[in-house]
Length: 280
Image (cartoon, rainbow, N blue to C red; front, side, top):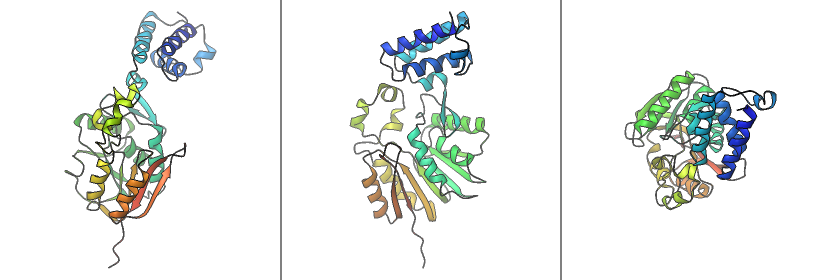
């Protein structure tokens, strides 16, 4: 079978299964299997693929047609210009979360300390450390399997970071210049309404923000002051309808300079605040 023929057939199969971006996913899976790049589709359309490549490709197409996420099939997701290993044990990094990273980076200075609560794949912490100078960081998560993925990503990227199994602040020691978190924030009743790639394949524990969706913000804010240096930054990714409530929580807890940042679609996406400096 020729390269272009495989791509066309893969695209049609995904389209029939109502896969968003079916043509793009078919191309990416073909590139993954054949170890090629996007230019091959246009420059080498008559390139013959081997029987093994054909079998592997259409096996992946069938899985993608069942709404298995593309990133679980390739094992990789790009984020902040870096490639992160992902699997069923961690949330797939999403472009919205880059808004959170960029916001923290704008306040990050050399040799600062960072705590990433609910670290998952480690994409937030490792991106912050990669794009800063001499900063140090701790990633905390309750999931052993998620921490394994985070450690693998740190090793692959050559970034030094500490990862700790912790139920929120349970096993956290010391104080930090920055506390950043993308905690679970989907209301339990809304999880069934999510697209199947998310609902059926992202870990439930990483999605479930409990009944009101803001349970984790409440718990983190309640205890963060003990671990955040004076004047330190706290930054959250939020759901699009949670900006006002999370901002109020921070203000009620005594945080100052509380702000809501929007994503590229104009939706509330990040809330930040500062721990008040005690001038006494």
